[in-house]
Length: 138
Image 1 (cartoon, rainbow, N blue to C red):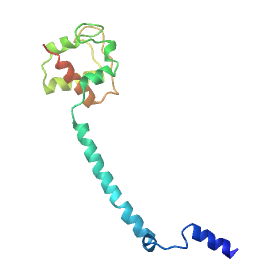
Image 2: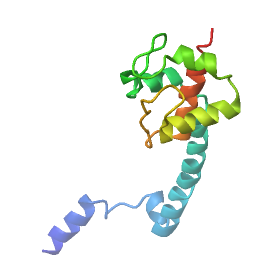
Image 3: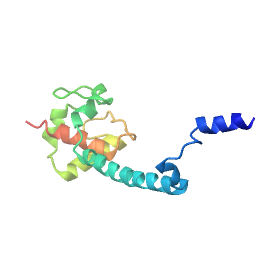
């Protein structure tokens, strides 16, 4: 029985000693895991830079339900994006106001048909959409 236990320990590495085994487990764990959180803390910072990059408003519009009511050059249910671009100057105050209309909905500026609210669209995404729309000004 003792031979079986000894053979089992030896097979699992109990019969040999290496340099890593001479280190206390707590030090090895601390030394190995301490750099990892620091590396993880710096990794998101590097990943945040692309998030700061300007979003593609056209792609956001294409991925949403906007085309149900709007076209670039022709009135559908809502106004054509080109008409919106003609009406509003591309300024930060207009981008903010129109982004809020995308999120909260609106009525009365383009007729009696209300624009439905899109509360799941972020301010950043709505602003990118508006910037694309206002870029269509001819």
